[in-house]
Structure formats: C-alpha cells, structure tokens
Amino acid sequence: MRIVIAEDSAIIRAGLAEILADQGHVVVAAVGNAEDLQAAVAEHQPDAAVVDVRMPPGYTDEGIRAAIAIRRDHPGTGVLVFSQYIETRHAANLLGAASGSGAAGVGYLLKDRVGDVSEFVEALSRVAAGGTALDPEVVTQLLRVSRRADGLGALTARERDVLALMAEGRSNGAIADTLVISERAVEKHVANIFSKLDLTPSDTDHRRVLAVLRYLGSGPADPLPDRPGPRGP
Image (tube, rainbow, N blue to C red; front, side):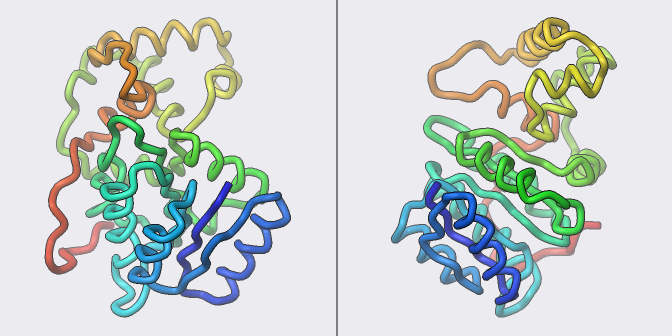
C-alpha cells in the first residue's frame, strides 16, 4: 500500500512509518497537521491515510474534519482514524461520506486498544480495500448518539449481533468463531440483513459497508460547520 500518515506526535509518526515500512508498505508522506495532510493526499493519491483526531493548530477536531474532506474529495483513498479520542460529533459523517461508487473504506481505532502490530496493519489493509475497521467502543459510542434506526426493528437479536461484528470489520469466519455458530449460519444471517435493510446487489455500492452505515445511523455526510461544535462524549 501507499500510505499517508497524519500525526502531530513526531515519535508516534516515526514509529508508524517504521512499522508500515517493515511490513513492506510505502509511506509517501508523514505530516503533523491537517492542512499538510490534505495537501499530501491530493499530491500522492495514496491507497490509505492514517489520521489522528486532534491536530494543530487548535488540537480539537482538525484531523477528523480533514478525514471527512478526504473521504468526500478523494473517495479512492481509505481513511483510518487512529486516535486516543472518540469524536462522536463528526464520526458518523466520516463513516457516511463517499460510501458510493469507487469509495474506499473507513476505520476508527483507538490507540490504547490496539496491542498488536499485525492487527493494526490488517485493519489498514482492510480499509484500503474498501472495508471497515471499527473499534467496538467506537461502535458503542456512535450507537449511543445515533438518532436513526431505519429498518433495524425488523432484525432479530442474532442478526443485530452479526451486524455489530460486521461493523468492527470482522469476516464471516471471524463472526462465526465469535458467536460460536457455523459460517453457513453467518452467511444466512448476512443475507437476511441485506434483505431486511433493502440492500439489493449492486455494482456500485458495497452492501456490507452500507449495512454498517445503516446500523450506525449515519446517512450522507452533513456539510462541515465553519467552527467546531460541542464535543461528543
């Protein structure tokens, strides 16, 4: 993969670049602020960008706002937010932006909950390939503030369990192992989820990602506000 890193801590930035290079990937740019992040993505058109939430100059939500802009303006670039903080105000917009044709994936991982290098690299690869990689705590926080549940009332408890694990980016095999059911049963649940959410097969939309977006209650991204609003929990 060709990757851009945006992290204000020089030590973490260098560490991520070394980890990814050791895994055979190419870090085309490593920057320390949101403005340079957007410029680097525009210049290099990377497969993925790793983005912190709080960056200069205000250290509030500059990073995630830049990530939303990248999802909107460069849908071929996967975006993995990697932060200590869950910014619920903008996270749903991040997940909803550019979910249509040609859009790469999106992820949101918490720094203190990723303890394995291979887990991080696998999540980034999944995002670059058009999938999702969401920390369970991020999913919990987003559901807590979600205002929509379109069609979810028709899902069974088990289908909701499967969809929650899909939101974390789990494969059917991993979901089967977690729920201690057969992979064939998972496939049936996934098919039922697509049917109940009215997600018909399409050449332009990734149904798995769209189901996750529906689950999290995130529709198309709202316009970015001129100033940061109240912070989420």
